[in-house]
Image (tube, rainbow, N blue to C red; front, side, top):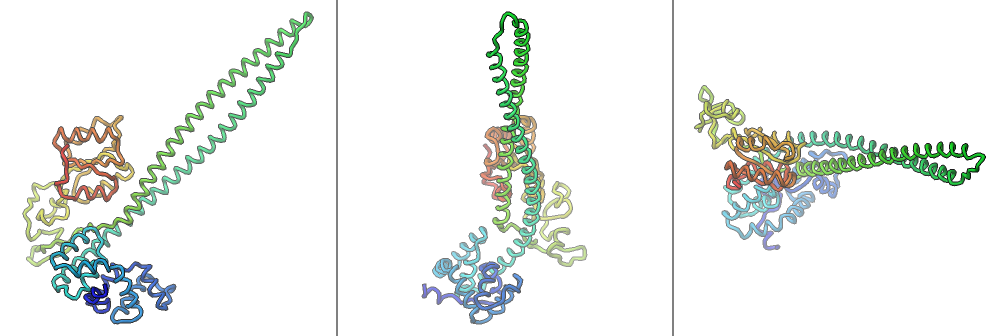
Length: 434
């Protein structure tokens, strides 16, 4: 391994414009803090961005801070350094493309930029891609934060409902115990009265009186027996209601677990998905070049789309080339989602409509909502069907309808936003027709 390390530059010798991206990709905020603390800095009085500033100031030369940064990065990147050392440049580009797609670029990025034989062209390409991904990820992070805020509010509302139902269950449990105590008292009273009837010994002189008392006792017993039957019926009804509430409670808990998993997925799965700027600058009415956001509201330099015949709101407003249109993948397409998490419907719709599509939804319950399913399948351009949050009947019915009307169908293993997004924008050869 020592021979391999000699082929790579330490962190303080790599080009200055690449030091910040390497540090940002390899060092977490907590690692920044840990390195500075070990080097004697008062990190308690510093803010997170100040950690990065202090470290970047020290990466210009060899010192105790840069050495600790270099040792940590090389330890984390040892495997990738060994791979890059034995690869030709075309192989390195292929490996980089795969890692860029998954977002795992930190250690490979350092291995490439620190390798002494890396060409300037490869360095420029990789540095440019990392720079553009940082912009895309920033947009994605703010979007995710807004979604997380919405989900957190929804979780709070669901927790309040759950607490209210828990209190109601406790009150019903207390009422059931009180009813059970009343039933016990009535049974004891019934036994007492039955014993009194048995101990009565009528004689000739008092037989008429005893007969009258006996009839009165029998009437009382009948009344108490009827009351007991009513209490038992009421008790059974309360037990059934209690069981129904327990089932409903379990259903809400399961739904909350699904929402929590989606919450975690939104935080951890920050995959690169930003839309790059238009690569062909447009011209305004005066003939001067435009770029960035201005291109989205003007005529693209390589336009071939007919805005009069396109139903996409974006393309109707601009004259844009389909090869460079950020919303072309779903432009004017009808996307039909069957199943998934009902409370996430607004987020599914947001993903589709932001990409220029038209969103339709069916919750997957076939008991009372089967009539409009076939009509929606016939109208749509693509059907999505997650199997982890759907009924077997709905999955089978959707397959039959898609096969009958020759509609493309994608069966998803998950109903998460990331799974739905991947299904919408992955290559069309993954679509099934049965």
